[in-house]
Image (cartoon, rainbow, N blue to C red; front, side):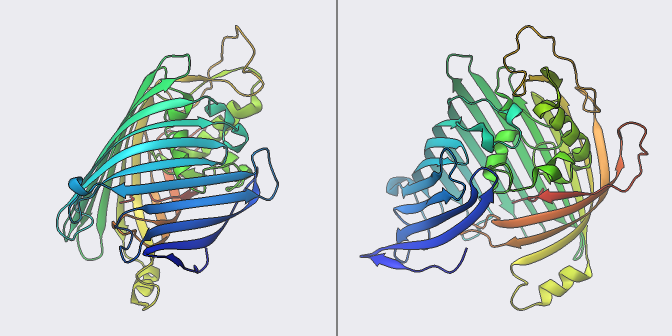
Length: 417
């Protein structure tokens, strides 16, 4: 994005920004983002608008896409730092449509934006209407799903530690088929052991009932496919080159997050996507649990950044050792494009280390470069690029050594507050 121009109408301010992005279906996506707010409220007042419209240079089947969010505080339900509001979201972009109504409430202690409780209730309709945009088409169904969602999060902050936990429950109503429920809980704890060393712990638990659409289920190495839509790098096919995804170089953070097994998972995803002529039984799990641990230690690059007057507040270069462990329970029959309409076939099982109920572990060293400008509520907002070296795996494939040089590039932070 580039600097904005300002158009003022009475006491309301519109701030337009040009926007440019890319994916394989749209090509270069040209657009305009507009933020709207009452003058002088600094994103904390009435009638808050966040909208955008884009045009794909390849002029695909759906060349125009849009996003619209409008938030209105409820005066009798709000106090300083503890706003209650109604939010309306409507969006149709990268082949995915969503229409949502939410009731949100925040309770904040004093002026510390990282010490709060938040809760929301929402009802939405959503659908992948063009699966050409999906990174892995075989993991998605193209049907409308009506979702009732409850979301509750807590954040506690002190001089030496920070704790965050987020619980999400969804009840999903599908067209002409059984409904299903999905629940996840993610907890993160960060503790400064000394001036130079920080310990970070993360726990993830996910449960999706048998009738759940594949995009709501869990991969051992990543979050569920539906969660990829929240990241601009993974929202559509081609932002990250498909060849690099297929060879396991890129890791999409989330879920149990066993980053050391990304190369093995990429090979299995490739089989499910189109290499097999018949449907396959695949390690897409109904239950998932993961634990991640980082020990951050000092490095000279970050020391230099923090002494810089202009960039020290926005850029961070972390170095850390890490350990991941987790497992998934259950498998799913996955149909690719060619096998979707072939009846009465017994699907073969894809052999892999991702056996149902088997604990996996990895360990290594990592580095993360972040360009982060927190939003007005103090939450992370920026770009996080990781380079992880998982040199030890508890279950390497074939006859590989447990100890071996491996590397993976990550998009998004693992410990994101």
